[in-house]
Image 1: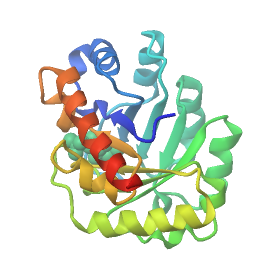
Image 2 (image 1 turned 30 degrees about the horizontal axis):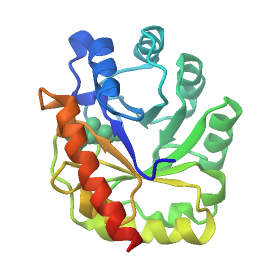
Image 3 (image 1 turned 180 degrees about the horizontal axis):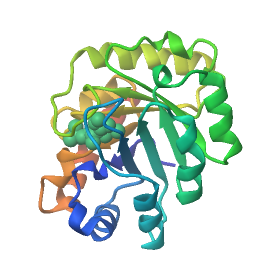
Image 4 (image 1 turned 180 degrees about the vertical axis):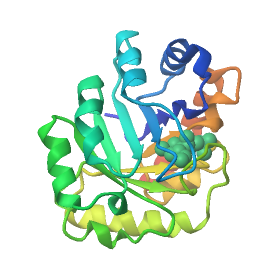
Length: 228
Ligand code: DX5
Ligand code: ZN
C-alpha cells in the first residue's frame, strides 16, 4: 500500500482539452484527481461544476475524484456532485449552517467526506467530528487561485492535525492544498501530510512523468527519514 498519494489539481490543466490533459496526468502517475469548485461568492473565482465532472467520468477517468467545494452554501450541490461521479466531497466548515448535517448528507449520497481548513481557520472545528470524516484538507494558501506561495504557518498546523489524527482517528487522510512543489514537498511530508494536491507544480511542466518522478523521489526521501 502506498504511504503517500499525489492528487493533481486540474485547476491548472488545459481546460480546452480537459479530458486528454487529465488522462495524461494520471498516466504519468497521479493517484487521484483534485477538482476545485469555486462559486465567485465564497471565493473570488468561478470554475467548474457537476457537468464537467460527469464529462470526465464519461471520458473514462476512473481514478478517485476529490471534489473540493469552495462554495457557500454547500448542501444544495451535494447530490449533483455525487450523481456526477465524485468519490469524496470536501467542504469548508464555515460555509455551511450545520456541519454535522452536511457530513451526514454527503455520506448518505455514498461519498467520502472531508473538511477543509483555510490558513487561519482553527482546527477546533475537528473537536466533535474527527471520527466522522475521511479526510482533512489544510489549505496552505488562501483559496481561490492556483500558483500561489505556500504559507509557512502550514507546517505547524500540519503537525497539529497529524497529532489529532494519530490520537483519535488514524485512518483519516491529511491532505495539503496550495503551493506544493517538488522543492518543498519533502518538508511537507515530514510535517505529517499524506495526500498532496499539486496544480501548477505539475501542469506548468511539459513532461508530467518526469516531474512526478522527481516528486516521488522527494516523497521516498521523506518516507525514509520518517521511518529511521
Ligand atoms: C486553490 C485550490 C488549489 C489549487 C492549488 O484554491 O484549492 O487546489 O489548485 O494549486 P497550486 O498547486 O498551483 O497552488
Ligand atoms: Zn483545492
